[in-house]
Amino acid sequence: MKKLTGVILCASILSACTIPTGDRDGAVDDDPPSQTTSTGASAWVGGSTSRTPSPESPELQRVADEIAAAAATDGQVGVALADGHSVVESGEIAVGPAWSTVKVPVSMAVLYRGTATTETVDRAITVSDNAALDTLWSSLGGGADAAAATEQILRKAGDDTTVPPEVTRPGFSAAGQTDWALTDQARFAQQMTCIPGAGAVLTAMNHVADAQSYGLGRIPDLPFKGGWGPDEAGDYMVRQFGVLQTPGGEVGIALAVQPEDGAYDTGRKMLDRMALTLETEIDAGVFTEAAECIPEPAGKELG
Image (cartoon, rainbow, N blue to C red; front, side, top):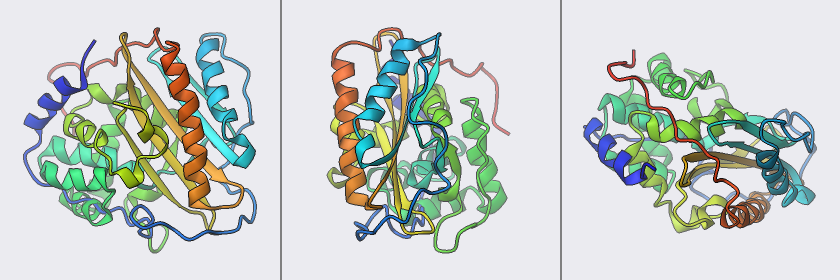
């Protein structure tokens, strides 16, 4: 089994410059937001609360359903798991703004292209520094150039997600408003250790600040990144994704919640319960069938 440390050493060679990243999520990734009252479901929601287990991976589907059920009483939830064989999902939330989880592929694009250093990446990932994302985005050329560079990293995982080149919502970053489906994010996470520029980012994802280490951050040795922000009505979505290393390979995990009361703090607690359920399943050894990610063929370059 590959170790994250091995990939980290590899990626450190690919990264040459400093990366400032600043995801202007209304500063919500850096400052505790105020409590809000929910005004109803948002456009982020799609799908049903529970899906029929996939005939290809009923056990993986069961785990996704268990994780979703752990927090479903407090609002809408979404779960996606990818183990290299199958991708399953559960809950009502299927897609939503990436918020600061987008700092991961942006950072990887910067490191691969050598336009910034790991110091800026560390700030963007470990404390979700929004100014750092701004610097990273600018180092990639900003606008269409930065969006294209980020999309090229996503394509390495077979992810066709489109990154907005310009601000679509005043007061928030262009990249942070990327509509990133949970299933696509889980697939990306499962492939992440095989994508150029991942090493230093995974290192940073293993050192997220204590204040942001709720949910997946409570599971030892599981690199992750979170993001959160309000919809037009002021109700918060809180989401996280991470990479679980198993003896056989990687499992990509993507979680999202939208609390019924619209409050960020409630979202944190919901993710804590979901992560606790996930950790119980990890301890029970249910992910033994995970496959390793598939490295890109040698000599293939990003455009």
